[in-house]
Image (cartoon, helix red, strand yellow):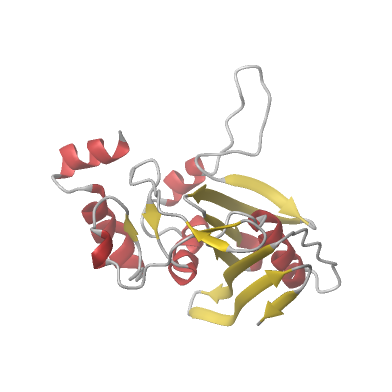
Length: 220
């Protein structure tokens, strides 16, 4: 429905609209909405796999639905997007504040879910986060606005609790004395980026390329 609304109002498909109004202004050079490009036009595309404990089996049934999902991106592009939650340039500050407002449910219950983003605390530090999964791919992005800290973690296998991994990486950055608690079985691979940012640019970045196999992490 969102994609159809954008197309009818602007005359552009969702990918064209996002490229002009989001991706290009933020320098997100490797992001697009699936369903708009043939697979052969994605030279750096990564495939996803199902790990049965002994072998990796390639997953071929990807959802081509876009609008409600279908965003293809990279860790580096997502850390360019996340600071919008603190210093918005694509929308007004008032719009972003509304986006981050948690509405109560009809019975008065208050959750942690705002408009497409969840708001929590970790070791006393507020953070906004969102994650997703499709066709074997999993993603988790988080910003700690008061700490100027952004973390993006992607994986191309189902069997890694990626939000746990992302929070454990965050614990190491907001509290160096905190213990991490990866709880994984089998084998998995993960790529992640941690960035601190300032108004003048990005600094103190760390890239994680990790492989997990039988209770052992390797990588950097």
